[in-house]
Image 1 (cartoon, one colour):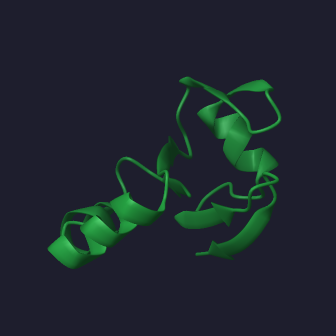
Image 2: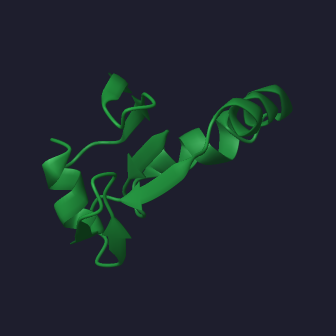
Length: 85
């Protein structure tokens, strides 16, 4: 699961601090998913699932996500199985 957000986005912060912080949601998520976070405007280096080295921003653009909070679930072949905005 890849969660892409913006550090200064009030809605992004609320999702993490309210919803994901709830015991049942947080526990379920940790038990069933490997969660990676990504700052849409970040400059830190990341490695895409195909092994390519990118900045967080370049990764976001490559995933078709250049401005909004997104949760993407990948299957075992590193293909997006479900994406929610």
